[in-house]
Amino acid sequence: MSKKRTRPKRKRWFLALLIIVVALLFIRSEWLGKMVYPIQYQKEIQSNADRYAVDPRLIAAVIRVESNFVPDAVSPKGAIGIMQIMPDTADWILKQDDFGSITTKLAGERADAGIRLGAWYLKELLRQFEGDTVKSLAAYNAGPGKVKQWLREGIWDGREETLSDIPYGETRRYVQKVLFYRKKYDELYDNWS
Image (tube, rainbow, N blue to C red; front, side, top):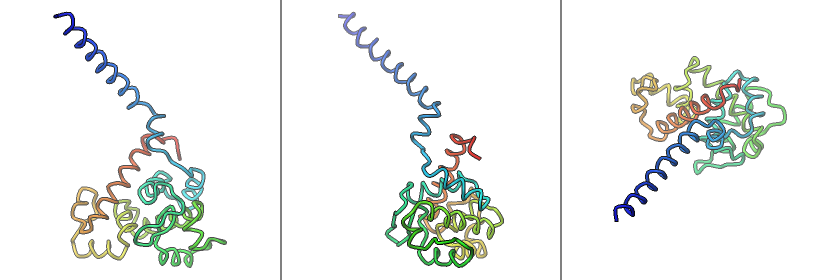
């Protein structure tokens, strides 16, 4: 009887050890990480990152959270495209610079057009918030006017450590998610300029 108990016990230990070893291999595996955290449209992201001097991994993280790389996504609130820009904001962006033949409609349908407008908007928010990524991300979600109001009224001090002070739960979670994905992309795509 003792032999029968030992065998299943040995099998369980062996199986547990095998699972741990395989898990450790996969956790350290760059290819697995890139499978779990892929970046689509890298060429378009890089091109616009270069054009507007915005970190490509930040653009990719915004895209991941906004649409999960779906070029023609439409949110329940009406945000459009891969970077989920509100149509009014897209119309405003198009008046600020020369975007060639890009229209609001195209930005809501095609990845290249949506990424171009979204990257430009990120650049503009980073300018408005003096390069502060956390404030800029909050503004991307809640609007720059709202974030400036929170800062002015002392509701939120603009730091990552005090995200819990942001009165909009959606904006708090949004900033946290984008920062999470950016960190993952920084780890996995460190050779991406």
